[in-house]
Image (cartoon, rainbow, N blue to C red; front, side, top):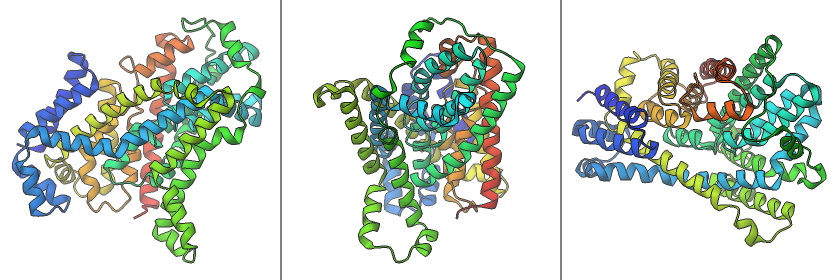
Length: 476
């Protein structure tokens, strides 16, 4: 059976399960993986094995596996890659919020740029917090500050809200260890350090484009501040007026976010051909230290420990009490791991159909065409079912097989293109759309006029920058 037909069957199963039968994404993705595996011919599996340079024995072993075994193997492989990292990131995010460290970061940015440029502070702090913390949580944290500042200034409410979104949503889709970019990087064989560097650079440009739109929109439309069901204005004001002296120091607050990025990217740079050429005489002991600390799991574990210590110090409580606050975060992380692993299994089974070489044939040898193709596939899935993470893990399963070929540029650019595609046209089927709508007090029409074009502009600008960098700085 043609891989394109199998692809359509798989996508129809995912979309139908989520949209028509209201299945949980984990179940829909798992059933779709089983269905595609059932119809995948032996020739597709053999072609996949050859593309991965497997031995004949390994290929025969895969061919002889039952459909359930192949899906379970793919599921386990993804869980191995991302499970620990997602759980550790959940711990870091929870501790940042509970200790007040996240609040300290936002206030420090605001103090640094001044109240007149508070929107820029919201964008920068949202971008930084969106790396270890899920976007919904970042928005919950920052909305009281935005609403209180609107009470004080009497204007710019739409600008404040859109600036938070411009920062938090793009880093959530481009910079690990959040689930989407973490899985996509792993599936494409991209080092986490490379993904962090590319995500930070391209994400910053995309975020600034969103901020520019927010400024333009604010100059044309003055969105009002309304009461919301989630909290009265006086309660929000009290929350945002906590004494700064009760919050952790800025350096301690930033450490769980910044240190992992420094260690991971340092390891990537020193292990690259450029790094080896520039630093040939580095002390072996120092190199060994960087390689150990630059391992993503080690780096995130250190960050989690620092965030736990920060929480203990801030709350002035014992370790036992602190640990009692973590189960909700780990429960959420467990669900994300299940969805991500099921999506990875679906993607892995799609690759076994031979969809990668098939799409390469369709691209006519134009390597850069892979980038808009990956972006478009992600965007279509995103618009159809709403979830940015599900769109990313579905898209990487479709185009992932092409990353093993001679693209002429680093596959990190495919990963970034997929992340940018996941920003396109959020609307009523997106849970984040409703979080923003209800928490901000916007009407549905106002949310469509702000959030939808804001994220779409960032997605388009991100793709353009990605294609330019892939051409000018291929990193191969």
